[in-house]
Length: 116
Image 1 (tube, one colour):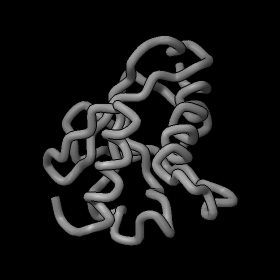
Image 2 (image 1 turned 90 degrees about the horizontal axis):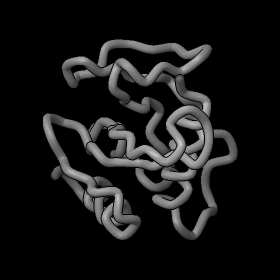
Image 3 (image 1 turned 90 degrees about the vertical axis):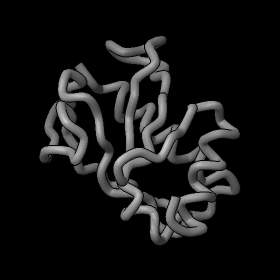
Image 4 (image 1 turned 135 degrees about the vertical axis):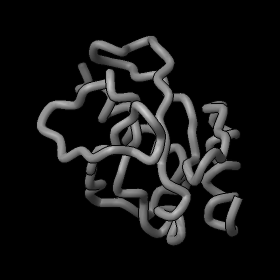
């Protein structure tokens, strides 16, 4: 891991039992969406370590997902992880939550609720 913001993010995800691991410049973790096509499934997702430099003041912009998890109306690019894409996702109204990692996981669950 590199730096306190990354450690804070990873420790928060551990507390939420998302099984985070730092691999190849990514924090990879598992999220279970509560609605949509993937509801009830564990979906592997990730964020770039480099995007966590301002955590928790600013959330990551990109959500990395396996290519088979398709998001409608997305700006996507190749992820640094083979077979994955990274999706541009703005988080409006970020900040002030007493549990920023919980807020992040809720955001990702919402994004995955729209996934095909």
